[in-house]
Image (cartoon, rainbow over all chains, first blue to last red; front, side):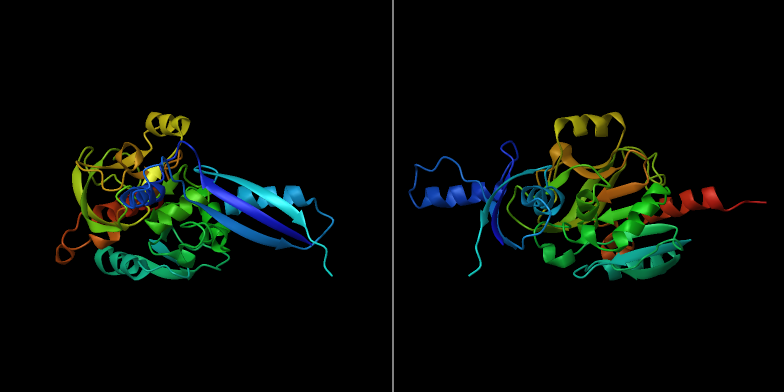
Length: 84
Length: 228
């Protein structure tokens, strides 16, 4: 089987009000080094092996549901796990 | 004329919508559950506000895969009037029936209050009873109504006159170009963040929303009722 880690983030040019609020809070905690905060989503999927191409499957899932590509980018890591 | 109010798990403006149609507009209306196969018996489809599927993943992202969405797409293709309000608008965006996406409000707050809107386009089946440029007052209630689309899409929206409502004066949520409501290119699918169904009687603080529903009826009567 596979463990798939999917990261969904707002596109670079899309305003992130949540991230801005967190940035403000970090500044108020005196972390003045913080220049930017972007908040995204992390999803962990467990997939059974099948005759379908795993990379294509995950890409499809991201495009169709996990990310809204109008405002979000995604990337993913696929790790094959050997079941004992 | 027969309206459908589509109910998803987590819809919470469905009763308001039903009330607006049944009691204030005086037309036939039925609730339709999200797993319905067909909407063929209805003349107009209403997607109410709320938090379908708990807004999990993204607002509207899960609802968009409900069984009834196939029937909604079919109705859209047939040219029937389809109105999505608030979460209904978000669902239409996720489903690709309208272009763009919603970001969180730039004010970091859930906003629930009446706002002023400008009717930018009154040549639609949803707005014929308004004057062009008319300023109306309709309540909003959302945390994610900050409309966004890319530049090409925006040019198309403007060129095709698809921006139907803009926030007048203050922009409450940061939406691009003060956009409050848009139609598809064909003009039969309207998505809007403000809640016209909450403004259908003076007792509710105003009745400016009623003309939107009356416009739909006028459109339908003109198309279907043969006068002798």
